Image (cartoon, rainbow, N blue to C red; front, side, top):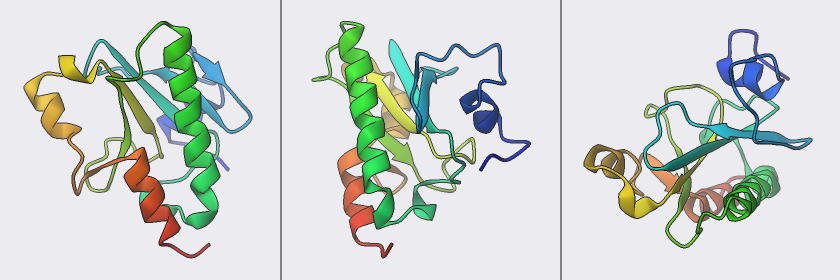
Length: 140
């Protein structure tokens, strides 16, 4: 399902010619963030519209895992070290686009002060591991 006025739905379905898709699978796409927090900042966006992490449940663990694996493989293929990378999601109300998206940011050590604050694992930003723990606590 896509939402007509959702920019990420348009990008994920290939309708936004201005956005280069770096990866496309049956479930998600990967593209560069327009406001990078570090040298390399990419987003994995599901083709199906989910508003945010809070709308998912235990049944979505596989999707989240595959999104992270896809981003890690993509960075590795580009010669970017995953050892200094950050992967995760913002939670409402700290999201700018109401479509689930996982951030991959590298190198984490080169992030500026504001980016370090915005993407600091916390109540508003969940690493992939924290997101999976959260999903495991929710019924399918």
